[in-house]
Image (cartoon, rainbow, N blue to C red; front, side):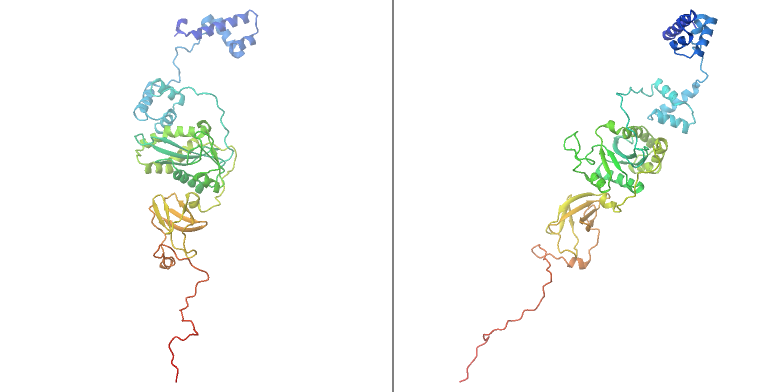
Length: 437
Protein backbone atom coordinates (compact mmCIF):
# COMPACT_ATOMS: atom_id res chain seq x y z
CA UNK A 1 0.00 0.00 0.00
CA UNK A 2 1.48 3.33 -1.16
CA UNK A 3 1.17 6.32 1.13
CA UNK A 4 0.85 9.97 0.09
CA UNK A 5 3.44 12.60 0.88
CA UNK A 6 1.03 14.22 3.35
CA UNK A 7 1.14 11.12 5.58
CA UNK A 8 4.87 11.53 6.22
CA UNK A 9 6.18 13.74 9.04
CA UNK A 10 7.79 17.04 8.16
CA UNK A 11 11.26 15.79 9.10
CA UNK A 12 11.01 12.91 6.61
CA UNK A 13 9.88 15.26 3.83
CA UNK A 14 12.69 17.71 4.56
CA UNK A 15 15.28 14.92 4.45
CA UNK A 16 13.93 13.70 1.10
CA UNK A 17 14.17 17.24 -0.29
CA UNK A 18 17.76 17.55 0.92
CA UNK A 19 18.73 14.25 -0.68
CA UNK A 20 17.10 15.32 -3.95
CA UNK A 21 19.02 18.61 -3.96
CA UNK A 22 22.34 16.89 -3.35
CA UNK A 23 21.64 14.31 -6.06
CA UNK A 24 20.84 17.01 -8.56
CA UNK A 25 24.06 18.92 -7.77
CA UNK A 26 26.12 15.76 -8.15
CA UNK A 27 24.35 14.91 -11.43
CA UNK A 28 25.13 18.41 -12.75
CA UNK A 29 28.80 17.88 -11.90
CA UNK A 30 29.02 20.65 -9.33
CA UNK A 31 30.20 18.23 -6.63
CA UNK A 32 31.75 14.77 -6.65
CA UNK A 33 29.64 11.76 -5.75
CA UNK A 34 31.78 10.93 -2.72
CA UNK A 35 31.27 14.52 -1.56
CA UNK A 36 27.51 14.08 -1.99
CA UNK A 37 27.63 10.94 0.21
CA UNK A 38 29.47 12.84 2.96
CA UNK A 39 26.98 15.71 2.82
CA UNK A 40 24.05 13.34 3.33
CA UNK A 41 25.91 11.25 5.93
CA UNK A 42 25.75 7.89 4.14
CA UNK A 43 28.18 5.61 2.33
CA UNK A 44 28.87 5.82 -1.40
CA UNK A 45 27.21 2.45 -1.86
CA UNK A 46 24.02 3.65 -0.19
CA UNK A 47 24.13 6.82 -2.34
CA UNK A 48 24.12 4.71 -5.49
CA UNK A 49 20.94 3.03 -4.23
CA UNK A 50 19.29 6.40 -3.59
CA UNK A 51 20.33 7.54 -7.11
CA UNK A 52 18.79 4.43 -8.70
CA UNK A 53 15.53 4.85 -6.77
CA UNK A 54 15.39 8.55 -7.77
CA UNK A 55 15.88 7.67 -11.43
CA UNK A 56 13.08 5.06 -11.24
CA UNK A 57 10.46 6.77 -9.04
CA UNK A 58 11.50 10.38 -8.82
CA UNK A 59 10.94 12.27 -5.56
CA UNK A 60 8.68 9.51 -4.12
CA UNK A 61 11.57 7.07 -4.32
CA UNK A 62 13.46 9.08 -1.74
CA UNK A 63 10.78 8.61 0.95
CA UNK A 64 10.99 5.80 3.52
CA UNK A 65 9.14 2.82 2.08
CA UNK A 66 8.83 1.11 5.47
CA UNK A 67 6.27 3.61 6.73
CA UNK A 68 2.86 1.97 7.10
CA UNK A 69 4.25 -1.56 6.76
CA UNK A 70 3.94 -3.66 9.95
CA UNK A 71 7.27 -4.82 11.39
CA UNK A 72 8.07 -8.49 11.20
CA UNK A 73 9.42 -8.26 14.78
CA UNK A 74 6.31 -6.82 16.34
CA UNK A 75 5.06 -8.47 19.57
CA UNK A 76 1.65 -10.15 19.35
CA UNK A 77 -1.15 -8.28 21.05
CA UNK A 78 -1.98 -11.19 23.35
CA UNK A 79 1.61 -11.29 24.67
CA UNK A 80 1.58 -7.54 25.22
CA UNK A 81 -1.63 -7.81 27.24
CA UNK A 82 -0.11 -10.66 29.26
CA UNK A 83 2.98 -8.60 30.15
CA UNK A 84 0.95 -5.57 31.21
CA UNK A 85 -1.45 -7.73 33.23
CA UNK A 86 1.39 -9.47 35.06
CA UNK A 87 2.90 -6.16 36.06
CA UNK A 88 -0.42 -4.61 37.07
CA UNK A 89 -1.67 -7.54 39.17
CA UNK A 90 1.41 -9.32 40.52
CA UNK A 91 4.63 -7.32 40.04
CA UNK A 92 3.27 -3.81 40.47
CA UNK A 93 6.07 -2.67 42.82
CA UNK A 94 9.05 -4.07 40.89
CA UNK A 95 11.34 -1.85 38.87
CA UNK A 96 11.67 -2.47 35.14
CA UNK A 97 14.93 -4.41 35.31
CA UNK A 98 13.65 -6.64 38.11
CA UNK A 99 10.36 -7.22 36.28
CA UNK A 100 12.19 -8.08 33.05
CA UNK A 101 14.16 -10.76 34.93
CA UNK A 102 10.95 -12.20 36.39
CA UNK A 103 9.42 -12.43 32.90
CA UNK A 104 12.38 -14.48 31.71
CA UNK A 105 12.91 -16.64 34.81
CA UNK A 106 9.36 -17.24 36.01
CA UNK A 107 7.21 -16.92 32.85
CA UNK A 108 9.65 -17.75 30.00
CA UNK A 109 8.83 -14.53 28.13
CA UNK A 110 11.91 -13.54 26.15
CA UNK A 111 11.19 -9.91 25.33
CA UNK A 112 13.94 -7.31 25.28
CA UNK A 113 14.43 -4.96 28.21
CA UNK A 114 13.91 -1.91 26.02
CA UNK A 115 10.56 -3.17 24.72
CA UNK A 116 9.32 -3.99 28.24
CA UNK A 117 10.40 -0.58 29.52
CA UNK A 118 8.72 1.29 26.66
CA UNK A 119 5.56 -0.79 26.99
CA UNK A 120 5.24 -0.08 30.72
CA UNK A 121 5.97 3.60 30.24
CA UNK A 122 3.52 3.83 27.34
CA UNK A 123 0.79 2.20 29.45
CA UNK A 124 1.43 4.64 32.29
CA UNK A 125 2.48 1.89 34.72
CA UNK A 126 6.06 3.20 35.12
CA UNK A 127 7.16 6.81 35.29
CA UNK A 128 9.81 8.09 32.93
CA UNK A 129 13.00 8.95 34.76
CA UNK A 130 14.32 12.47 34.61
CA UNK A 131 17.61 13.16 32.90
CA UNK A 132 20.78 12.96 34.96
CA UNK A 133 22.44 16.07 36.33
CA UNK A 134 25.93 17.39 35.80
CA UNK A 135 28.67 15.18 34.46
CA UNK A 136 30.75 13.40 37.11
CA UNK A 137 33.75 11.19 36.66
CA UNK A 138 33.48 7.75 38.20
CA UNK A 139 36.29 6.71 40.51
CA UNK A 140 38.19 3.68 39.31
CA UNK A 141 37.73 0.46 41.24
CA UNK A 142 40.47 -0.91 43.45
CA UNK A 143 42.45 -3.59 41.60
CA UNK A 144 42.18 -6.34 44.24
CA UNK A 145 39.41 -7.58 46.54
CA UNK A 146 40.01 -6.57 50.12
CA UNK A 147 41.78 -3.30 49.34
CA UNK A 148 38.70 -1.21 50.13
CA UNK A 149 35.33 -2.13 51.61
CA UNK A 150 32.25 0.09 51.66
CA UNK A 151 29.92 0.06 54.66
CA UNK A 152 26.65 1.94 54.79
CA UNK A 153 23.09 1.70 56.09
CA UNK A 154 19.79 2.39 54.33
CA UNK A 155 16.72 3.52 56.29
CA UNK A 156 13.69 2.20 54.42
CA UNK A 157 10.30 0.50 54.79
CA UNK A 158 11.65 -2.88 53.79
CA UNK A 159 8.45 -4.76 54.70
CA UNK A 160 6.25 -2.26 52.81
CA UNK A 161 4.29 -1.33 55.93
CA UNK A 162 4.58 1.33 58.62
CA UNK A 163 7.79 -0.18 60.04
CA UNK A 164 11.18 1.35 59.27
CA UNK A 165 14.42 -0.62 59.51
CA UNK A 166 18.07 -0.12 58.59
CA UNK A 167 19.80 -2.43 56.12
CA UNK A 168 23.54 -2.60 56.82
CA UNK A 169 25.56 -3.68 53.79
CA UNK A 170 29.32 -4.26 53.41
CA UNK A 171 30.55 -4.60 49.83
CA UNK A 172 33.90 -4.78 48.08
CA UNK A 173 35.01 -1.85 45.96
CA UNK A 174 36.83 -4.03 43.42
CA UNK A 175 34.02 -6.48 42.63
CA UNK A 176 30.84 -5.07 44.24
CA UNK A 177 30.51 -8.42 46.02
CA UNK A 178 28.28 -8.26 49.08
CA UNK A 179 30.08 -9.68 52.12
CA UNK A 180 27.41 -8.82 54.69
CA UNK A 181 23.77 -7.69 54.60
CA UNK A 182 21.45 -7.67 57.60
CA UNK A 183 18.31 -5.81 58.64
CA UNK A 184 18.43 -4.18 62.09
CA UNK A 185 16.17 -1.94 64.09
CA UNK A 186 18.72 0.86 63.94
CA UNK A 187 22.25 1.38 62.66
CA UNK A 188 24.37 1.67 65.81
CA UNK A 189 27.93 1.03 66.94
CA UNK A 190 27.04 -2.52 67.98
CA UNK A 191 25.30 -3.44 64.72
CA UNK A 192 28.15 -1.98 62.67
CA UNK A 193 30.75 -3.86 64.74
CA UNK A 194 28.80 -7.09 64.32
CA UNK A 195 28.95 -6.75 60.54
CA UNK A 196 32.66 -5.92 60.49
CA UNK A 197 33.48 -8.83 62.77
CA UNK A 198 31.50 -11.24 60.58
CA UNK A 199 33.50 -10.13 57.53
CA UNK A 200 36.79 -10.41 59.46
CA UNK A 201 36.03 -13.95 60.58
CA UNK A 202 34.97 -15.09 57.10
CA UNK A 203 37.34 -13.20 54.78
CA UNK A 204 40.19 -11.82 56.92
CA UNK A 205 41.60 -8.36 57.54
CA UNK A 206 41.09 -5.84 54.73
CA UNK A 207 43.12 -2.71 53.98
CA UNK A 208 40.69 0.20 54.26
CA UNK A 209 37.08 0.98 55.14
CA UNK A 210 35.07 3.65 53.30
CA UNK A 211 32.11 5.08 55.19
CA UNK A 212 30.00 8.16 55.70
CA UNK A 213 30.62 10.53 58.61
CA UNK A 214 28.09 8.92 60.94
CA UNK A 215 28.67 9.37 64.67
CA UNK A 216 29.61 5.71 65.12
CA UNK A 217 32.37 6.02 62.46
CA UNK A 218 33.79 9.49 63.01
CA UNK A 219 33.85 12.34 65.48
CA UNK A 220 33.00 15.59 63.67
CA UNK A 221 33.56 18.72 65.82
CA UNK A 222 31.55 20.95 63.49
CA UNK A 223 28.41 19.73 61.74
CA UNK A 224 29.16 19.21 58.08
CA UNK A 225 32.86 19.87 58.59
CA UNK A 226 35.95 17.72 58.56
CA UNK A 227 36.32 14.75 60.87
CA UNK A 228 38.79 14.61 63.75
CA UNK A 229 40.95 11.58 63.03
CA UNK A 230 42.82 12.06 66.31
CA UNK A 231 39.69 11.23 68.34
CA UNK A 232 38.59 7.80 67.14
CA UNK A 233 35.21 6.35 67.92
CA UNK A 234 34.67 2.80 69.17
CA UNK A 235 34.63 1.55 65.56
CA UNK A 236 37.70 3.64 64.71
CA UNK A 237 39.60 2.27 67.70
CA UNK A 238 38.80 -1.33 66.68
CA UNK A 239 39.97 -0.65 63.13
CA UNK A 240 43.19 0.90 64.42
CA UNK A 241 43.96 -2.19 66.48
CA UNK A 242 43.53 -4.34 63.34
CA UNK A 243 45.55 -2.00 61.11
CA UNK A 244 42.61 -1.00 58.90
CA UNK A 245 42.63 2.52 57.44
CA UNK A 246 39.34 4.40 57.67
CA UNK A 247 38.36 6.83 54.88
CA UNK A 248 35.50 9.34 55.35
CA UNK A 249 33.17 10.37 52.53
CA UNK A 250 32.16 14.02 52.33
CA UNK A 251 29.22 13.72 49.90
CA UNK A 252 26.68 11.13 48.71
CA UNK A 253 28.28 11.31 45.27
CA UNK A 254 31.58 10.17 46.78
CA UNK A 255 29.81 7.00 47.92
CA UNK A 256 28.30 6.50 44.48
CA UNK A 257 29.09 2.79 44.36
CA UNK A 258 27.29 2.01 47.61
CA UNK A 259 24.49 4.49 46.84
CA UNK A 260 23.76 2.77 43.52
CA UNK A 261 23.84 -0.56 45.28
CA UNK A 262 21.22 0.63 47.79
CA UNK A 263 19.05 1.86 44.93
CA UNK A 264 19.05 -1.70 43.63
CA UNK A 265 18.36 -3.10 47.10
CA UNK A 266 15.37 -0.81 47.62
CA UNK A 267 13.99 -1.72 44.22
CA UNK A 268 14.22 -5.48 44.78
CA UNK A 269 14.37 -6.65 48.39
CA UNK A 270 10.93 -5.36 49.56
CA UNK A 271 9.28 -7.05 46.60
CA UNK A 272 11.14 -10.32 47.18
CA UNK A 273 10.06 -10.30 50.83
CA UNK A 274 6.44 -9.67 49.80
CA UNK A 275 6.43 -12.44 47.19
CA UNK A 276 7.70 -14.90 49.82
CA UNK A 277 5.38 -13.69 52.57
CA UNK A 278 8.25 -12.71 54.92
CA UNK A 279 7.11 -10.27 57.62
CA UNK A 280 9.56 -10.65 60.52
CA UNK A 281 13.09 -9.39 61.01
CA UNK A 282 14.45 -12.84 61.88
CA UNK A 283 12.96 -14.49 58.79
CA UNK A 284 14.19 -11.67 56.57
CA UNK A 285 17.78 -11.97 57.86
CA UNK A 286 17.68 -15.73 57.40
CA UNK A 287 16.49 -15.22 53.82
CA UNK A 288 19.32 -12.73 53.22
CA UNK A 289 22.04 -14.99 54.62
CA UNK A 290 20.88 -18.27 53.13
CA UNK A 291 19.60 -17.20 49.74
CA UNK A 292 19.38 -13.62 48.60
CA UNK A 293 22.96 -12.35 49.11
CA UNK A 294 24.29 -15.17 46.91
CA UNK A 295 21.65 -14.41 44.28
CA UNK A 296 22.46 -10.70 44.45
CA UNK A 297 26.18 -11.37 43.95
CA UNK A 298 25.47 -13.72 41.06
CA UNK A 299 23.67 -10.96 39.19
CA UNK A 300 25.68 -7.87 40.09
CA UNK A 301 29.19 -8.96 41.05
CA UNK A 302 31.89 -8.03 38.54
CA UNK A 303 35.39 -9.49 38.03
CA UNK A 304 38.25 -7.76 39.81
CA UNK A 305 40.69 -5.79 37.62
CA UNK A 306 43.55 -8.00 38.80
CA UNK A 307 43.96 -11.51 40.09
CA UNK A 308 44.69 -12.19 43.73
CA UNK A 309 43.39 -10.86 47.03
CA UNK A 310 44.40 -8.22 49.56
CA UNK A 311 42.73 -9.97 52.50
CA UNK A 312 45.16 -11.05 55.22
CA UNK A 313 44.68 -13.57 58.03
CA UNK A 314 43.56 -11.94 61.24
CA UNK A 315 46.60 -11.71 63.56
CA UNK A 316 44.53 -11.07 66.68
CA UNK A 317 42.48 -14.01 67.88
CA UNK A 318 40.64 -12.23 70.65
CA UNK A 319 38.05 -10.50 68.48
CA UNK A 320 35.65 -10.43 71.44
CA UNK A 321 37.69 -7.68 73.09
CA UNK A 322 38.57 -5.86 69.87
CA UNK A 323 34.93 -5.61 68.76
CA UNK A 324 33.65 -4.40 72.10
CA UNK A 325 32.80 -0.94 73.32
CA UNK A 326 35.31 0.23 75.93
CA UNK A 327 34.75 2.67 78.77
CA UNK A 328 37.02 3.71 81.63
CA UNK A 329 35.70 3.64 85.20
CA UNK A 330 37.17 4.06 88.67
CA UNK A 331 36.54 1.32 91.23
CA UNK A 332 34.59 2.47 94.29
CA UNK A 333 35.74 1.80 97.86
CA UNK A 334 33.44 -1.21 98.13
CA UNK A 335 35.08 -2.82 95.05
CA UNK A 336 32.20 -2.08 92.70
CA UNK A 337 32.00 -0.37 89.34
CA UNK A 338 29.02 1.72 88.24
CA UNK A 339 28.16 1.32 84.56
CA UNK A 340 24.90 2.25 82.78
CA UNK A 341 22.78 2.02 85.95
CA UNK A 342 24.42 -1.29 86.87
CA UNK A 343 26.54 -2.08 89.94
CA UNK A 344 29.24 -4.60 89.05
CA UNK A 345 30.76 -6.33 92.06
CA UNK A 346 34.41 -7.25 91.45
CA UNK A 347 35.62 -10.73 92.25
CA UNK A 348 38.18 -11.15 95.03
CA UNK A 349 41.68 -11.66 93.63
CA UNK A 350 44.63 -13.33 95.28
CA UNK A 351 47.12 -11.08 93.45
CA UNK A 352 45.75 -7.85 94.95
CA UNK A 353 44.03 -7.14 98.19
CA UNK A 354 41.66 -4.46 96.92
CA UNK A 355 40.73 -2.84 93.62
CA UNK A 356 39.46 0.37 95.21
CA UNK A 357 40.69 3.46 93.36
CA UNK A 358 41.99 1.51 90.37
CA UNK A 359 41.22 2.57 86.81
CA UNK A 360 39.15 -0.21 85.25
CA UNK A 361 38.24 -0.82 81.57
CA UNK A 362 34.64 -1.87 81.03
CA UNK A 363 34.29 -3.93 77.83
CA UNK A 364 30.71 -4.19 76.57
CA UNK A 365 30.61 -7.09 74.08
CA UNK A 366 28.34 -7.55 71.08
CA UNK A 367 26.20 -10.05 73.01
CA UNK A 368 25.65 -7.34 75.70
CA UNK A 369 27.79 -9.16 78.27
CA UNK A 370 30.40 -7.13 80.17
CA UNK A 371 34.02 -7.82 81.00
CA UNK A 372 36.18 -5.83 83.44
CA UNK A 373 39.91 -5.70 82.72
CA UNK A 374 43.03 -4.10 84.15
CA UNK A 375 45.75 -4.24 81.53
CA UNK A 376 45.75 -7.82 80.30
CA UNK A 377 44.03 -9.23 83.39
CA UNK A 378 40.34 -10.06 83.35
CA UNK A 379 38.82 -9.09 86.66
CA UNK A 380 35.20 -10.10 86.11
CA UNK A 381 32.65 -11.25 83.54
CA UNK A 382 28.99 -10.21 83.87
CA UNK A 383 25.67 -10.64 82.13
CA UNK A 384 23.80 -7.76 80.52
CA UNK A 385 21.88 -7.35 83.80
CA UNK A 386 25.10 -7.09 85.85
CA UNK A 387 25.01 -10.62 87.26
CA UNK A 388 28.41 -12.22 87.86
CA UNK A 389 28.95 -15.07 85.41
CA UNK A 390 32.22 -16.39 86.89
CA UNK A 391 31.64 -18.30 90.16
CA UNK A 392 33.56 -17.21 93.26
CA UNK A 393 35.18 -19.85 95.46
CA UNK A 394 34.98 -19.73 99.20
CA UNK A 395 38.73 -19.29 99.50
CA UNK A 396 38.63 -16.24 97.21
CA UNK A 397 35.79 -14.73 99.22
CA UNK A 398 37.71 -15.14 102.51
CA UNK A 399 40.81 -13.36 101.20
CA UNK A 400 39.01 -10.03 101.01
CA UNK A 401 36.79 -9.21 103.99
CA UNK A 402 35.63 -5.74 104.72
CA UNK A 403 35.86 -4.29 108.19
CA UNK A 404 32.87 -2.86 109.96
CA UNK A 405 33.94 0.57 108.76
CA UNK A 406 33.74 -0.50 105.11
CA UNK A 407 37.50 -0.53 104.59
CA UNK A 408 39.65 -3.37 103.46
CA UNK A 409 42.61 -4.35 105.58
CA UNK A 410 45.81 -3.82 103.67
CA UNK A 411 48.12 -6.83 103.62
CA UNK A 412 51.72 -6.33 104.78
CA UNK A 413 54.90 -7.85 103.49
CA UNK A 414 56.45 -9.66 105.15
CA UNK A 415 53.41 -10.78 107.14
CA UNK A 416 53.31 -9.80 110.78
CA UNK A 417 54.16 -12.55 113.23
CA UNK A 418 51.36 -13.20 115.68
CA UNK A 419 53.47 -13.66 118.90
CA UNK A 420 51.48 -13.92 122.15
CA UNK A 421 52.10 -11.08 124.55
CA UNK A 422 54.35 -11.86 127.59
CA UNK A 423 54.86 -9.63 130.62
CA UNK A 424 58.17 -7.91 130.39
CA UNK A 425 60.82 -8.60 133.09
CA UNK A 426 61.00 -5.90 135.76
CA UNK A 427 63.64 -4.92 138.25
CA UNK A 428 60.96 -3.83 140.63
CA UNK A 429 59.15 -6.29 142.85
CA UNK A 430 55.63 -7.04 141.92
CA UNK A 431 54.56 -7.96 145.49
CA UNK A 432 55.32 -6.61 148.97
CA UNK A 433 58.18 -8.32 150.83
CA UNK A 434 58.76 -8.62 154.59
CA UNK A 435 62.11 -8.37 156.31
CA UNK A 436 63.05 -10.88 158.88
CA UNK A 437 63.89 -9.38 162.14
